[in-house]
Image 1 (cartoon, helix red, strand yellow):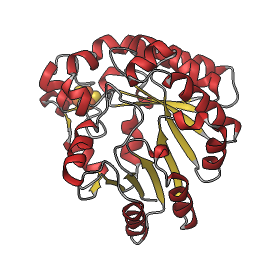
Image 2: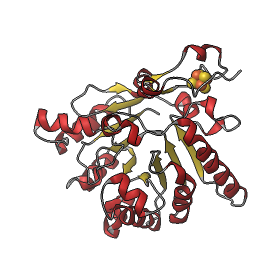
Image 3: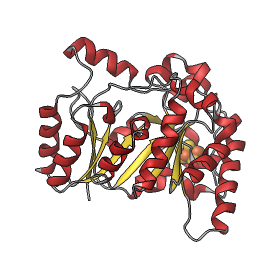
Image 4: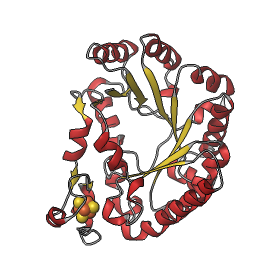
Length: 309
Ligand code: SF4
């Protein structure tokens, strides 16, 4: 089934060092004097996608939960038959009634936790107290019976603590985690050297989190899921199955609706903003692999990657 990724707007109660939409937020403020879609605009986009048979939607942003019409939009989408996924920083769900109310409409929550402790997470979000709110938010959603996945964006602040952050998500009751190499757009682009680590430095810790999850899953009935995003398969020898490229290749039509930008087929658009290398032609994964975000080799070259024969 096709799905829609709907950015409700760019307003947010965090200010993450790796935020990919910080430029778009500033542009929207200038262009429309507002960083968010109106309620009517959100409904129009939902109905437009529905008219083309799209019945799954991810609400994202910015931070959807800080909108005054947040619950109304969940209800609107659900009443029209959409299966709902919500991407959020989870802070607002530290308020139990909101966690319960949202849980009645949302099938799947994806909540960003960027460190195993307040020191790392709050330095990443540049918002004091955000770690405790997010952790409590995840707990409240799980208590309300929701399916919650964690999301960790790798940065220079947190890459050495990926295993502990995944462990924290397990303790909070999340069902799995997506760990993503940062896309150097927006804030991550303007602070590239301070935010974006080198793949060669990160990979020992990625292998550590893989071993940790695999060991945990050996001893539990229900596996904790692990997906690695924007990490090319040539860096994942023997553990290629965790690469999101497999899901992307098998995925269906995926429509991305950003604010004030024409809808895009995200499967195609993602490949256009990633880069492969001349040697990829000789790699066994060439047909499947999406490569890396284009900005990375522009700054750091191709030396860390190489074909898998
Ligand atoms: S060599 Fe190229 S095609 Fe092969 S895994 Fe690496 S980036 Fe992907």
